[in-house]
Amino acid sequence: MEILKIENTSDSPYVYFDAEKGVFEISGLLIPEDPAKFYQPVIKWSKEYIKSPNPQTVLNLRIEYINTSSSKILMQVLRLFEKLNIEDGNVTINWYYIDEDMYEAAHDFKSILKIPFKTIQVDDF
Image (cartoon, rainbow, N blue to C red; front, side, top):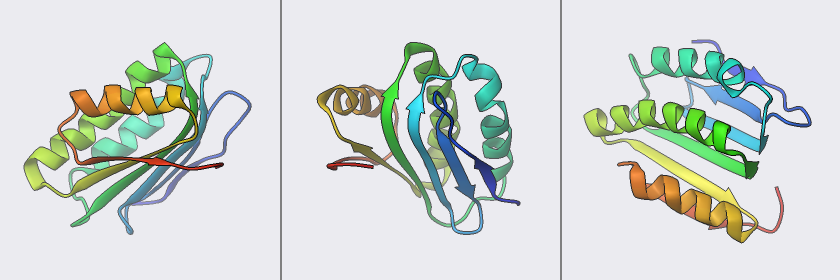
């Protein structure tokens, strides 16, 4: 599979999904005007990846801020990886956060998903 790379903008995150390494990153602001349209290639790529995943898959989320509509779409993406984790047991999410709001958002996702989930405080992205 080809690498999925989407450059960040003032309202959308940087996305870098590398199937060969099994390492995926979403970072920045998650407030695109049309989240469904923005995440369409991410969902499509993820569905292809889970058909033939690496032995270990790591999702690194460095989210500065996420709005409600983006949270719903991100949950759809993470549900795909949850399915992979239930089947293979080799998915980890690392959620890096700076402030309390994103720490709480991470714990909201963590309480719903059946994926090993680490919250890691950092000073800056």
